[in-house]
Length: 292
Image (cartoon, rainbow, N blue to C red; front, side):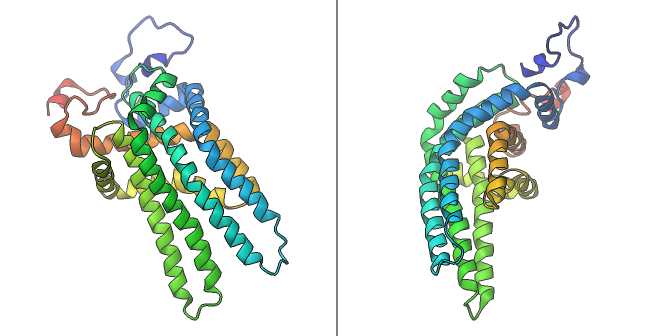
């Protein structure tokens, strides 16, 4: 178990005490931060291989956009065209990224359960099991990202000449809201898909239910992970480089955070009654608590 690596390079002469065992998922996450940084960074770098097409797409088109002279007569139209084609290409790139995320979600499930796991092989087990669903949900997220970026830019572009600019403001708000909702749902599809066996529609529907059930926690975690990453990717070139480094080395910590939140929801709404063997799996709970 991962917890057995807590005393690195030291041999323990006694068993772990009850106090040292993980009682909460927060303790699991903190233990990973403290004792499993190298392994988590390795997982992030493995995922980054699948995210690389999306990153390259954004960086290349951004360089083209930067190269357009600001005094160009058709500057706004040229920028919009570049953004449009960048986000069209981003859709299949997102699908490739979600294949990697399916593998990472599988590894994070084992980590959350405190199972001994070979991360590399388990990563590709997750891909083998769930790549079809990952492509579907990657397409959904890619389209949502397209609507966010292209839709918002189009609204902003037309707002200046509009007689009713509040209409464009509402449109931009809707673009942002749909992206937040679908991003959270798509994360749940990844963590749910490697946990239970359902059809693609059932996975999406149940993920929406968990989005509603854990709304405020979901929203907070979104802001700290996906929202921050996507937001900085469209600030400037320096911000992009910074966030790319963060993705390359720390994305697995974001996924394990989502996994632990998901497992909390699964325990509350599914496992307690239907799958007692999964209930609070990976946590130390007293025998009398298991029976209640």
